[in-house]
Image (cartoon, rainbow, N blue to C red):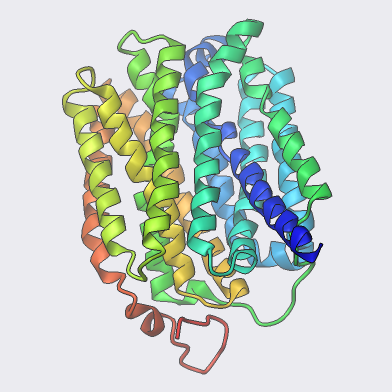
Length: 404
């Protein structure tokens, strides 16, 4: 009997990780395949509609930076529940509204909900899946990206069925409701309530800032792809369903990479070879998107998806590698995601601005190529031997524990 209870608890933990991840990207990726319809009804320009992707990401960054205070005030159980309620509320409001202002407000509301969950999940995984942290982060990342792909694929289908784009955006309240019920009825073992005690101070550490910059730039391409990949092909006379399915196709390779690369990386403490391979895949994919967009679009999108999926999971794993104690690791991850997502938020806005300025998305893809190559060169400094040196506390503070 005890063994059965242990297995059920383990299965519930994995199911909850997947359910949470599935709800963290539809608020972003459901917009892009319906963008032309939304712009036609609301009169939004390319640059202003970019805020529908940028605003949630800005919220993700700002709320993640407050992760320590949120954890102390709410605890994991109530914090995650509140995040799911905010996502549910944003989707419901989108279902009922049709003005540009509603879309912008719900982008903020939904983004804040996503940020709450993202700020709390890494520490939860670090504690709950001891010995399987890389694999659990891979499953979490894969479900997160899978949710984004499903939204890109199904939102135009739902919108077409009901003959209104609001339905394509609002339907994602259903998985949010399901995850909320699961979270409340099947809580993780060992969930923390409010926490107290010494806090890490990553904003005073150079390596923490470098990890944040790295996380932001290696993942920038995802936000631009979610916001503009369908629009790029809509301008080449693809339909909304075709362009949305291309984004979903990219997600298939994101999910595969998020599962396979962390599993491989778990066999070694050195993440650099896997990160280098992932960044190279991104660079080749974006180059193909510039040079031969119609010849082999699925190949370029597959490479981009593989690189992005692996980079998200591996950069989070790299961050958690620097801290042994779960709470310190969670605080560092919240800081890295906070700054990183604020960097990410610039990407779709910059892409939209370059599109308005040049009349083409090609210049934005070149900017992403330059950023990816720069991060490929930076990857070499993240050797396992540097973890202890980077987070050595000069005054003997135990705030950030390192690997032995």
